[in-house]
Length: 117
Length: 113
Image (cartoon, rainbow over the protein chains, first blue to last red):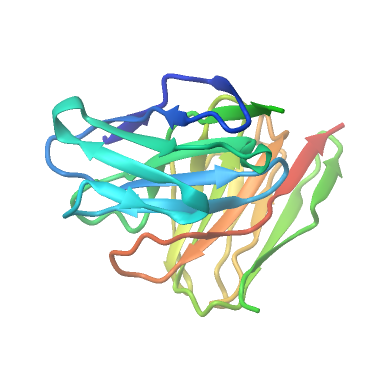
């Protein structure tokens, strides 16, 4: 089964600093990849998604992610973090990353982002 | 506005009781999903449904049951057979196809007391 790993459980950055959240996937071909954000006690919101084509994907709230096949990674970045970005972030991949999976997603363990003023 | 409504937001249950979590969507989405979220474990799929009157088990279906009698509704029952039901439960929906664009509800936090 396809999987994603988020190596960092918790990251702390200062407001205005740059951010990179790591995501590694396991799949032989090019997978579909997603980043979601979750505020405390809330549901998840899609930040961005990668299907094919340009490996640098722009998302909402100033986030971007870069697909790197050689590193099996899909890291999320933001050049300048705002206090409102404090949340938990999840990387996800379809259960059958390149074929029929009935929309089922496998999520990483999540990375909690804390932003210091 | 279209969206997914989960109710209640907080739910307390005594051991040995069944409890039903509500999930309603007005997005006209075909597929609906239930995920369980525990700290540090991401989201795990409980059940999913692609069409009305049809549903399949996910990775952790034991102790749970669902129904899909209407397109808009996908209630989840947590039975007394679920050994560790205290968790945050998320419902999601999407249109069938390749977009995988989930819409999530705001969740129900279930606590067994």
